[in-house]
Image (cartoon, rainbow, N blue to C red; front, top):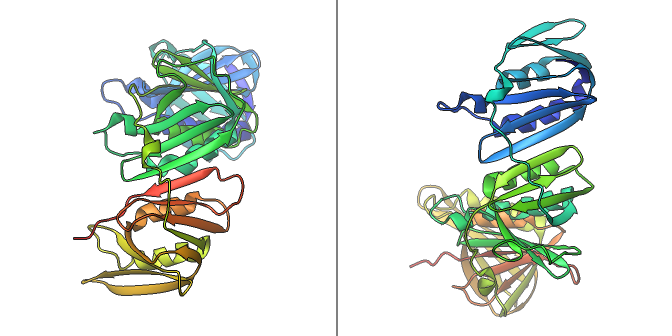
Length: 374
């Protein structure tokens, strides 16, 4: 095995792969990256058995070969090398990294011990631009359930509909939905029809790996697995088996109060209120007064003190007071694109809806359940 490549072609890729590897007592090989030299290509692989990634980069290959090396050492070494060109040579179970000014050796293991990463070759479930998919997942991902008490909520729900893709996450207290306009091939279905649930960890890696991919990526299905493939990256993961709840039932269909508020002003008011919020509930109070065209954001705790901030708003409807978790508000506000946010409230003890203030193209919504103060 002998090849030469440019550091700039590799540095980001090894960081992506090292995120997937981890310490495993029973299978230490999972802490490694598998390196393979083929004609014109340098192939890097990593897996944690739940998810696997294969990355293909350009390289000048003199001799083919394969070896697995510790991911942390390899990544840190590549990062620390200053030269543009790096030559790799394999000698037995040792990998040599050579530049003009340095020689480094990493002890590796035989690649035959590296777990097989499944290759899915079934029909394409979906095609979508990589950066659009990544951005959509990034917007909803804060709403994923952290606990495994509800496995179906511990992932991203992707639903194909006529002319659009729905990407959803909820933990039971809040919900985020992103809509992508897309031509859909509805002839390809999973056992749950036109939907799948991707684990939260996989969704996070999709964001990191494909966020700069402007071309379409292909999502392929096979039994309980999904793969996402671009020109030079292949990701495969298990999917969550289960039926996602009918989340549309909790989306408010009517409202008695509407608020249009500047996004940055609202966010800054929430940040200040968070400093005085009660630690056990993270509560902040929104007091909407349509007659004064203002909304106050306040919080109070015995130990810290209290604050109140008044914001000018565009509003119509009834007066409302509603208590919300400021962390959920942070996530929702930051996920909404645009200068203004539209807030819809039906009752003080009912979930509120937040979305971009656009006359057309409202493609994102967030729902937050209130904190019911006794």
